[in-house]
Length: 252
Length: 248
Image 1 (cartoon, rainbow over the protein chains, first blue to last red):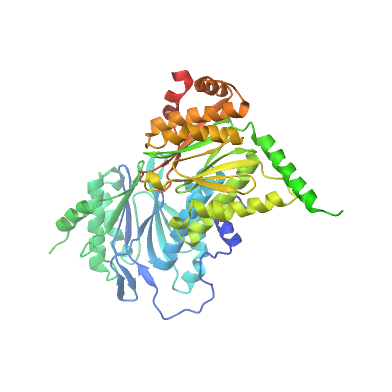
Image 2: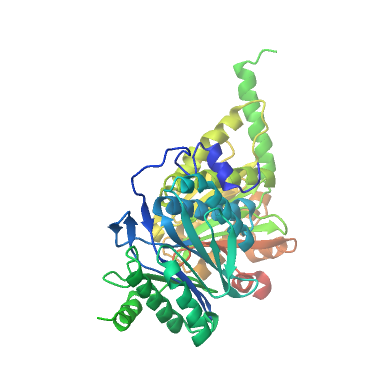
């Protein structure tokens, strides 16, 4: 027994994670997938934005999906890919972090949290290989030791990379990657921007992704979701702010 | 060797005596609803934590052997997290933690003549959206438990518990602020302490001051209004200090 290990606790209680069996043959059915999510730094921390669309094959399954979730009071996760697998993984991680802190009477370190995300991805790998259970997370955290926001992204097997300025995942992400670079080189790094500037850039990128990728919802008709993580914890960007930017950024 | 019903009763009585003896001088714990949330207060020896976070809105405090407090705490944390994941955080309630997970297990352990009894008396608190919905469960070493509203105490003796409850009964009718509740909790703690140690005509501040020569005040709040999921936090030194005898 390794102490504070939530996966072992679940096994002891007869609970499975992930809940589905490996080895199911690939199915022609389309699993629901979340699409473009974006993380960029700003001078106080990290900003996450995501459209609200979830797709199943070429059908729009929901226009109100939440793809930016709180892992704990100072960590955000933005998810692209299999919604079921990602959502279950997020619930697992939320409990895993809290379980560690409460059972061991000390907080799980940022490094510990990031490794746990890798482990969860490797557990989801059999599903990913079958083509229905893969997802890609971007983790944004406020690092209290370095006193700055940090962005981490993963591959489907759980390899972790840190990004200096931005991260994006999902079907629209590849298409706007160059635009991030362009912004950094022409307007300066994201981590020096004010929140309102970083937010405007990120939302415009999301709108561009939507114009290049059918699976991305963009800024309309449904407002995207935007959250920040800073020294003060996780904060939602208010709807009015998003609505004002939606009006300014969307070209008729 | 045959084990008769007489032996069994005798064993239970001896076990109860054994536990009561060890609990008698234990530092009481006080739980009290206030406007800002649920406050838990005790005085502990420097290294031994007595108040613990169990789940998003649940906390536990107790007296007894540190190892037995730990057993109880770990069981509660395990149950709460497995349930919170399997169902939802809203389905993790103090009633289920104490009534379903802990009480029957403690009863079984206490009535097993071949097992050492747990030396522990616990107080569990659940934060509600409003003070009327705050809940306090007192859990005894034999698995029996009782429910209280507005306040709850756990003490080393029955007399101490009764004396502490008398202090809080009237006070808790009006919903206090955190500051007022904290001061009253310290007084209640001292009253319980005097009763257990049979100190006559006590000045509660003097009793507290003496206890603080070797111990420290430990206090935690389950916050009613918070952006955080985890509502539990310890009171900071600057929130505790102004109410200690040395500051008055």
